[in-house]
Length: 159
Image (cartoon, rainbow, N blue to C red; front, side, top):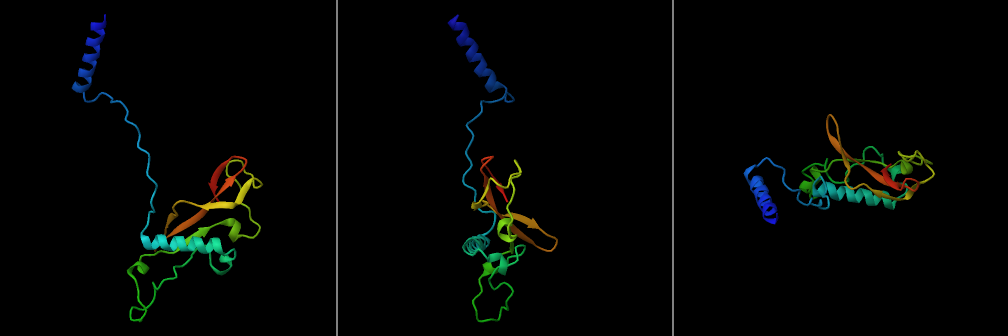
């Protein structure tokens, strides 16, 4: 009996190499590496600086329009100016930041799962990993948001 089992096992391995269409054993799945930004270094620097400005100034949206936060660089300046211009200034697109609890007075976002506004924690809201791209007819820009956590569902959601 043991010889028959050994012979059957050997013939099974021979069948696998002979038939390329047989399913192979699944290999261990690779873990994804940390995601990197989907934009250039100049755009990344602009987004980081904008996020710091929004976090640092609670009245940021009193001075800036949420739908078009412009790059402070010299993108639209004359090339004949004595001020030094970097090439990166021409590659940076404007961004929009939709953060309702900072834009609209006394607004509290509601959880999309349990529809509760009471359990939402906006004080510990974190920025999304990568801003989304809004494609327009004439140009495009990035839209940024913060993720809030619902204490009832225990799940984060973009506000």
